[in-house]
Image 1 (cartoon, helix red, strand yellow):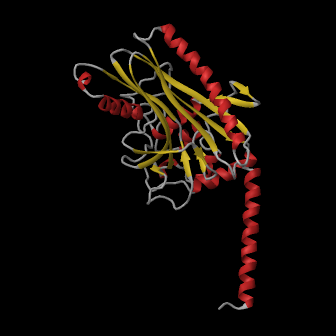
Image 2 (tube, rainbow, N blue to C red):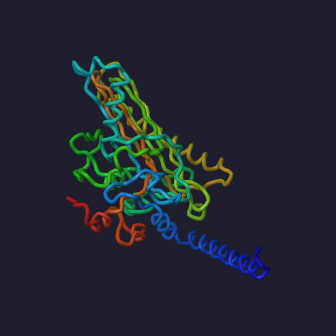
Image 3 (spheres, one colour):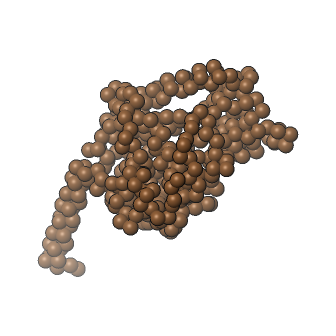
Length: 335
């Protein structure tokens, strides 16, 4: 049995520890980069060359994780061979092709998660390795500035790499897409992801979209960042014409604004009502011909970083731009 003196000493230490925790919490709300630094320190995975799934038993024993954004589309041609396949077989190949297009998320055992990044998570391309510093809002809705998602998609590709032999960019062009192998998630990982998908046997247009809402900084320690994922298609009786594709694009632009409005309402509904500081949103779309089968996917994996993807001082990542990270990292080459 502890003495009274020992109990008092324990209580005194507990009070001091609690006081320090409160002080740290106040500091985090004043300095968001300190908060992100702490997340990074607990989100470095067990592998040197590969990122890892959050929850990997060999990974860090912390609740911390990193998310990236991915929108992509996979299309297969219905030739003499593939026409004979059943719909499930066609869908599997088109889905896997979408995973390997753009930011590489191939060979993973994806487990569907819900749509939030909590206080222990951070978004690659914005909160670390920032690729948005030169961006300006496209417009605002209910006082919330709305930004294009493209820089976050590019950041995901910069981290995970891409399979340029299979990647097809529909309705978008990239001058800097020759990235190749980077720090892909280790094949075979049990990978939690925020995910939505849609499939369509042509003709028509298939699409995927994502919105990400960032709460105001003073709420970041107690609320979550919000994902809104969506995917779908517009059917056409024939091969989609230029006008049909253009009309679909206009419909999706309107839909993005509807998603933003829903996100803002979602924040208001929470037990601690959330005011968003900014929202990123965007979509990818692809025409699907009558002799094609397409799948569109929206993915955001919850993961830990490859050791070689992190600077010698990991805290630097909270202050670096994506371009600075690429130049600083000796394990990658840039064009």
